[in-house]
Length: 415
Image (cartoon, rainbow, N blue to C red; front, side, top):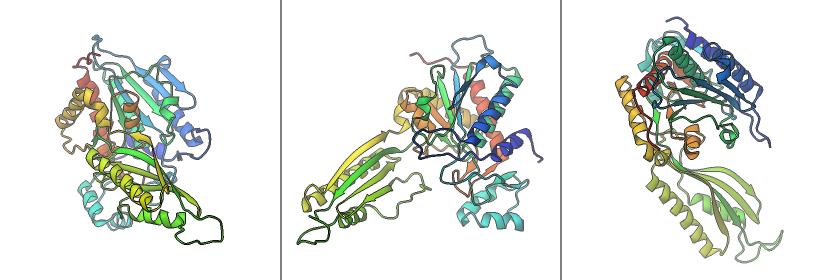
């Protein structure tokens, strides 16, 4: 298999560093993200009228493809992609390419053996003869962002060029999903899809209509030292209490959430001295009952320590995120439509898990826009082990086109 237009677009985007910049008071797109926006706008102009493209300075692009079907009751399809890569790692500017992956090839085997464990290698080996694009092992490839952009652009271009009947399609390109207020800052006045899809990344067939319950816990722990340099009877430092508190939490929980069916307590930050400490925990779980049990455990640990050391621990819960399944309950025909389209396309590996808490699907559902996350075909996204099959990207293109085509046969839900 030679390099096709989809592959070339992806590799062109990969060559641009789009790492997020975090920690500044005012969130702005990086230079690389702006470069990608310019490339997207230029590509859109080849098949979308200029009047239908709006640059949302400095947060992204809004574009609209006019309906070709006469019926006005066809649901409007929304597609959302983002430009960034994880701020913790740099972008992989020179990926490793295997035009025809062979697990027995010494070079191929050597590269992936240095990145993947045995179970992960076994999964990769199913992609024998696929065109594989891999990270260099030191940086991220962008299978949830750059692959998503490539897939959506080629899907839309194919729809327009095919001259088939379809309803209105709206595209929203965002910069920096790591900015919590990013979506609210973008001008969403004209973005009014009935069926909205964020291209989130993930293995072939992953459809995200469920996500973890999540909350941030800010915990203050106070010792009862009276003054520096003295240790009185029955006095205890904040450090001792903090150690006791952390040790009471479940151990060995996976910070990377490789098995996303499992939840976690994740320590994001710890500050303080002998008198007081401040902890920031992320608590999340895909199962609501387990999530509620985690909150009860947190409360119980604090209560027990406060019995021994009165008023030593206080907990404040912030930024609660509910599973997108809760938001989609009123829009279940939309979920059913998406899943049935996948089944009809022969994509049988349907995952309903794994929407990361930074997921745009979660954010749009919270804004009242029913949204489902879709796959790109990439694996190990936002890690240095990232790789993607071009054949799976092509299936993602085909799936989006099928969603648009099948939606033209449906009617909008009554509001």
